Length: 379
Image (cartoon, rainbow, N blue to C red):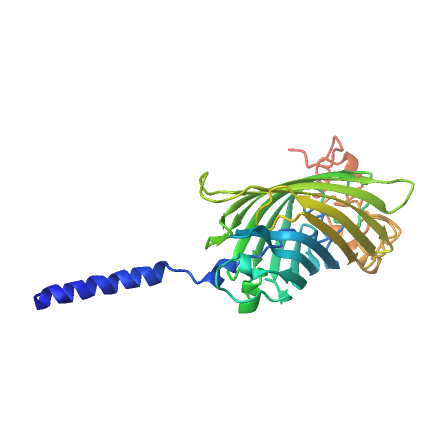
């Protein structure tokens, strides 16, 4: 065999080895998925996991701690049959949200796995034992209300329709153990959602349509997790015989964007719960289940949480707290003219023609040039 042939065979062998190494994925890398698809509401103006469009208001904030129990989050089959890889998981989400003006809010959520029971043998991936507790990927979310009253939750007149946009990203700041414990994606993911809701006298309906971007697909138990379409619908109904209490119902779905037959699975989940609010503290409770039976779809889910909103006194109900309201007993007229001081301005341009009758309310007519007294300078 000539030297050239030997060199060529070695080159081909080395290239094949490189291709094999490049295409091989460590078994533990297939675990880099967060199984916690349920992301609790950031405030009590939302529903359960479908977010609302009403904002906290300028500088107002909320703190929330939501705990979840989920059973049967991950099922796999081996030679002995089908069984749970993760049977029981107790988790929690700690979140904080602050209002940015009257139309926006920024929130940070920190998810935790407090305890889980596991059986990695059914994965047959040669990976390490799954930790019983772990930190999840922090989530940063920005909501902007693009349609509807911007005055925020202080205003009792916040009933009506609203539309908001939400952009959220997970930050892969957790450990290798968290990724192997199905608590971290180990990559940046991005959610973009359009939110819509309508509120009237405590009754509320909400919808969500979104898209989740995963830069790198994951395969777990024969299921491929890649980009997803997200949707949800929610309803809350007040119980007038118990002030502060309402019941909430939700259904949500995750639909893979891969072509049919690529391994993606549509997941649908439903939850039924309640919220009880008293003096700035809201208690949440809910039970639910997943209907897809795939990765992250629990047989049973239970939610129990508390959300605290510091009470802000607003005697005249104009959405401006008393400590910033120069006319605390007289509501602002909110007409776009000096609305920040909290005082009614019945004649913005001081031309002695009330704004209600003034066709040019923010521009005084020139002297002796308003013969029809409509508040505008005659041509």
